[in-house]
Image (spheres, rainbow over the protein chains, first blue to last red):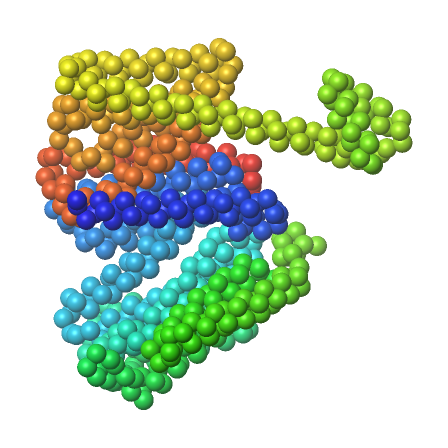
Length: 364
Length: 230
């Protein structure tokens, strides 16, 4: 069977499972209250259908552009076609007020960035180092999305868009920090700091400058305009500069391979500690920001991330060194304790949170 | 407002009393207008829920029935594949589709059995989709197979536009999703390699226009209903 058929079947099955799960959640949430309408996947059947039509229309248009390009002998690269598709999704998201199209468009931008910056590096044939533009650019785009999301959430009608941007931003931030906090992530970082340098690929440099300007402006503008809480602005700035630092790193030796195992060097230990600390701070920060902003979805989101973080890091750090029976007993006790603490903490935070301020209340 | 007032309202509604009469009676008992409104809302709530559940049950049962009939028609053709001529197969499918659509239209418009009629019309759209693939296979048409789904989308959207049936719209979403997610793989892996063999950009363009026009029309209706939440 064709590999694409298998992939597509798997995608369809996963989509069906996620769809069924989200529908269940959506129904439960709708039954609870109308107050958090902006957290709903769809507001009505008409909302869902119209958005699906717009998504499929955009997709058909993007496919048509791709097919025409194919018929004319691939005048444009597939990356440019992807960028055109993103523009199509963006325009239709704006004119149709469609959050589904907006979400797909944003994911498209992130994929395009990854593909295009990797291509520029390959084209210039100067080693692996310029690929650092991929994670750095993605992190800056994630910060931009987060700030723009909270800026947009100030308008009640656009709040669903804002939440979508902020969630995608948070997911990307977490994925990047999580990747770099693991052994394979550090190995990737080590490879990216081999001689070559970001400055040898002018396209990546220019692209990074553009994204850095946008991201930096979003932090400053968000802080001045009070779309971002000062702690959020501070943390976003720290993240911004940590990743900026990665572009200027000299050749690093982070891991020493020893037969079938590998060991962290002093520099490796330093970066592992930095990334793990920043990741944990980011997750706790999300929960804290949710509390300050009175947004229950941020608290829930942060809580889920904290559980995943704790479980993964426990396995990562202690599985090799502890007796297995002790390992599992400690894990069980720890998870139970975390669950107990989280239940209490989450209940406390949720109870102290008041309904979010709306446009009408602001105007009064 | 007590539970006895709600009970009274329930009983009165069951006895066929009008809401005006119930208002008058409860006002005489000293209830305020807001209290009577709450009372009537409570009294009718369970009935509304029951009625909604019954409607849903009818819709689900009828739709499953429609799907089974569709399966039956195609398994009949498959079982008699060797014996039937091409024309026989096509005529069976077309005749089934026309019959089912006619029955559906009659049930919905003439007999006012909305749910059953819509289920039959939904079946008509299913048979239409099956007929596309059957025709392509019988006549060995050289097309990229997701094209069949796109033709199905076009037919379903036209039917959905005319009949305003949500199930047919969702069918179009399903068929469109399958086709359009598959398409880039085909182009990328050069499965569609010959321009003369029609990498059917025109079909894609038409599908895009139809989806977008339908989407914007529905979206406009939604935004009119919900101008401050999107």
